[in-house]
Image (cartoon, rainbow, N blue to C red):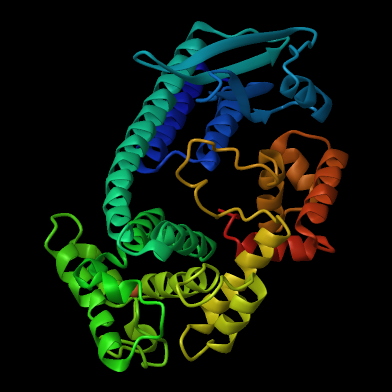
Amino acid sequence: MDNFVKQAQHFAALAEISGVLYDQTLRYEILQLVADMVTTIMEADVSLLYLTDERTGKLRLEVARGLAEKDLAKLHRGETLKKSGIQMVRFPLKFKDNNYGMLTVGRINRVWSENDLEVLDLLTRLVSGAINKNQFLYKMRKTYLETVKGFAMLIETRNYYAQGHSERVAALAVNLAGLLGLPEETLIDIEIAGILHDIGKIGIPEILLNKHAKLNQDEFEVIKKHPCIGASLVGSIQGLQKLVPYIQYHHERFDGSGYPDGLKGSQIPLEVQLISIADVYEALTSPRTYREALPTDEALKIIKDGSGKWFNPKLVETLETLIMAQRHKKPLAQSYPNKFSFNLSGPENHLTPREMEILALVGKGLTNKEIAQQLFIAERTVKSHLTSILRKLDLSDRTKAAIYAINQGITG
Ligand SMILES: [Fe+2]
């Protein structure tokens, strides 16, 4: 290929990658994109992207292109890759003193030119900068969340039986929002609002919050003030004003029978409805002053009985999907906290990164042959991955896997 054309392609690829890295929070899909571009544009036979495990400091292979499964298995076992005629080059993903990982690329029986190495060097700098930015935002957000959690815990110390309630509501609401495919910024708002939803209880006498007997009507009227107290408190804090509706409406009900404003249906923002359903489910499955914690099935039945009345039927279904998936340890691609954590490969018991890639492509309607071509692996390897995916997801066939991928929003 003409040298000039090749250089132009390299710069176009770099521009595209820098645009993607600049715009988005670093996620596993973006690392895949980087590996794909290196493979196609830089004409690499093998591309390996490693990230440094924060806990152990060791490199962990995140994305691989151009390797047969047996070679991949060897790499995962920490063995070195041996291929005749391969020329491997390594570029550390480093930003100032931080080592984030390594990009390793190889060509078989072809050498790397000076220009190729310069482009790869520039590319790894871009990726390193993006990881650094992501880490910085992640740490900032963590500090912010810790502060908010500390505040909520302070309130919860006044109410013995509610300890940890806000945090659990936040986690559940964000998981549900993740399943619905809501954007990342919304997930952050939902998490903070979930933690702060009962902040207004600061204005309610402790004796009522901890009362063992059922509240009488007058006492309940006092309790009912907490959403408004919380909303005005949050509204007075710079940067938290956008959370006011979450706090104000978290006791509204789908049929309009809630408080304080009697909003119904779509008048209640979906994000707030998520916090409401998470709040009730968490409360039912936790002990209270007047009863034991209910078993999951019983709590779910109460929620389902309230479908279309207290709760949006769509959210009831989403909650049931989540609870069932947790019970059977099914992978939920969009679930929290994986979206923000730096463990981009996902928690244990979930699909492997390779299986997630294949599932996403199945969801896009690709055949095994097309998937094999796209991932540079053998067709029979795709087939064996698919068998494993179906087993882990407890699905009977490819069509159901495709539907699952689409519903879970993992087709990209
Ligand atoms: Fe509340």
